[in-house]
Image 1 (cartoon, rainbow, N blue to C red):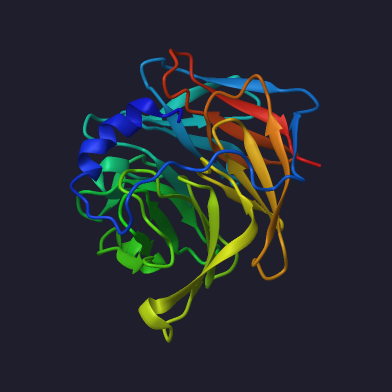
Image 2: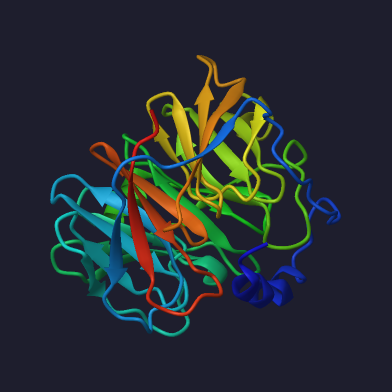
Length: 320
């Protein structure tokens, strides 16, 4: 496991949380024997964070209206804003002690940030940079991936607690409200520690896909108020991405950072099965944790969990 620093910090917190399954050793190796592992082809561009003291960049979000991308740093929640035309990624918001930025997304004119160990979801105005909302999920968790749907719903994973967090568009607009928790047990086994759900994407307004970092299992979550606990959960067969993190949906493919690079998973029409079609690798990748698609390129955040600065974002051609 690459993220020694963060996992160590989270371990004491996670010990306070009762999880539904004991920890066991994760499986090794890929389950999809037909997947190719190949170096990226074509030119690779590397962007560098402006300030080396802001450690561990992790999440990334593309803002099409301004042709810029936003990157958050884990250690103090600093937010960077970059342009594909500028090799230096500049500070947009200085972070503060006692905050994390582990997930990031954009809803209209709001920049949304998931707060990791601190359990908060913060909203900032993109024009004024002022905080315009804050939502608390409580303590003893670790918020991770954040996804904004086309309808404006916000979904946030928790790597410690066996729930998925939800904000409505109305709550985001108002800047206040209590996030709803969607229970995930027993269908998704939870382990003791911060190694549970990380990535989340929406296939539709009522269908989500999540990835479990511990063993790479992908799950389809169908939201249904008539179902027990308001959802049905189905494992996605035939494809796992161990160490999978803040993934994106690219057509009918999931693009999943797996710390060594990107794993590309093609879903069938009903998202009941997946095929790992390729695992992209590049010498520029250092603990790949977040990804965004920009034109015909993927922007890959290099967390560099235990690396010294500089911290970087790699731009590589999309998978064919």
